[in-house]
Length: 258
Image (cartoon, rainbow, N blue to C red; front, side):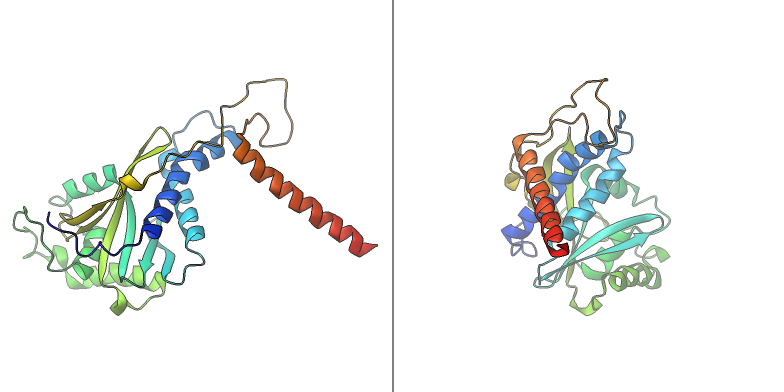
């Protein structure tokens, strides 16, 4: 695929922050959610994980002067986009499995996918080395008005000028058994053929879960939603720090009243 040109200046910190956001979401965040809410099935996990990913990304980059995050909506689905003001790259996140599914649907689709619209707008002219001629260029599939409608909605929701966006890239990841297995960043064209890619998987670090198995004890019941949970020391330390801060705040309030 040749040397990477558009993605080579992405900082290691950015990669690490994205990886940690996704890793936490598909790991401890969703596990804790299941245990706290006493769920004994995980049917909704693939969808609910996205709420944690979106939240984590928003928190990670909340104080970054060069990264903008924002939520946009396609139908009933809400997505978080990431924009790097330094590089001019607009990022979206997607599962590997979903990307492959959308890519296979390209010849059959009657309407353009939002990733295709973004690629048509910001990656125009980029071609993959081994790619057949696009069959849709002579049809209204890539109608300029339709592309602009999709792209303008996203840009407006992010509240950034369209002229500062240089390229669009997709961050693709795969997870299994509450662990992040792979993650890469890809630049695609409007056919969703990969033009350039950068594999970030080597930057994934093993993080021991702070949540252990549920302690089975039917006799122990209370209104405490975390009842029955067993935490590792790292989680206990976080809980203890929070409790200490709350106690100090209450004590301070009592002194003020006196």
